[in-house]
Length: 205
Image (cartoon, rainbow, N blue to C red; front, side):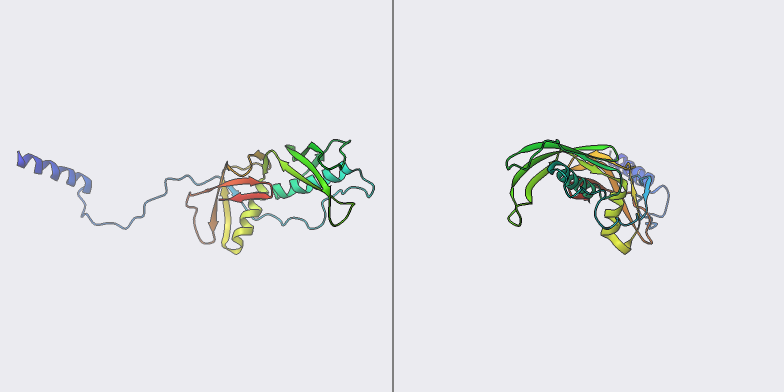
């Protein structure tokens, strides 16, 4: 019986070595992750200056608020594109007023919960307010701008899983989009991290 057991062990060992010398050939294991298909190159910098068009000097409070929400929407997208905003035309600046305003970035809609506060301590002409988006926006250019800004001179390019020009995304949580940063002189590894939408722009972690 002991001979049979020893023979069985020898067969397994022989099968594992495949008749070779048993020495390690030094080959590194390959990543089982898929290299992502969408290449992101360095985008142009964001334009400087105020977002256009800006409200007229005698614009209603709702128009001024809509303009501020357009600016916030551009910051969230971290990209340039067609931006619209609309608040109730009869929205006043009385403290405690609440309303829903709507912005779009390249036709991706975001609704904002707006609450009007008191007068600013700096000027009676300034009104404090809070505006909370109900969802976020991710943009292809915005993610590229984030990655090239974070990795600066080290990044060669980024690979992602087909982020659209603009798409709605939940705020502050992992989205379905992922990217890999490929450094200069390196090859893609296939290991990617998720992209997240926040109210101040995309994040990568």
